[in-house]
Length: 342
Image (cartoon, rainbow, N blue to C red; front, side, top):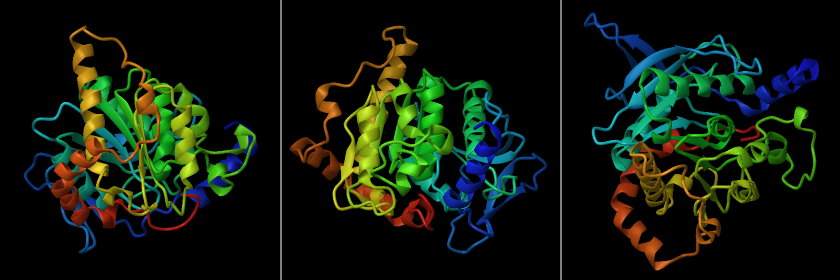
């Protein structure tokens, strides 16, 4: 965002959109074995310790428009031995990496995927006095480039997952990386101002933040939108509109009766993610063998809101033990806590 007006909007949005836990729920410490490797040590009793991850500090670079950069952010990579897909998870506005790590561990185990989590600038043990929209864009691009350039992952094997305010940097990444494997938008915002005023017809882009409505049509990867029908923070119309705008959408999950705080408790949550991961994995495998180009556009049936079908019910029934397993550990970390625009 250019000029003083852009800086004013960024400053206001940072106060509305970001609520990092204070104090943070964890510290980053170095193992005492001389390896120099890092680990996340919870600082509160209600956050379990997760050792099955690789913790790194990454220095962020500004975006091409000069936004953000210059921070040292904390990342945690949770591996799965049989994974072919890596989920790059951008969390909500009122949690930090310490709270989310147990969730990433469970998602990795249940979905048989690697999960890369990170804290935004100004969150947790990441440096920076105040989170900003620009910093989050630089943050996610830095983590993505680490996955591709340092860890040597195929971009088509990466799914960018954004929850609530995390849908902003996730949509940004999806719009700027044409060969990304997939995008998941979990309770996403249409844009900052459109969360505050859902019925708004027009607002100047330079005075808005996280304009997902402008980014969604630019995403080449398949996009899965999940939204609770009773979302009290970000109205479901935001998710519905983003789904309409995506050119390569898959069947969405409209979680009947669920709100902003408990969408992941829906029985269809894990089966829906599992199906999407399988789709991305198949496309990635085919592409690596030279047998396929970009993922095929979704069919009309995928574009429509999902009805309650026998097939969907069967899949949900098969996954219910896993869903309950996740539900026992996830809520404290995965739920959004706090106010603001998300």
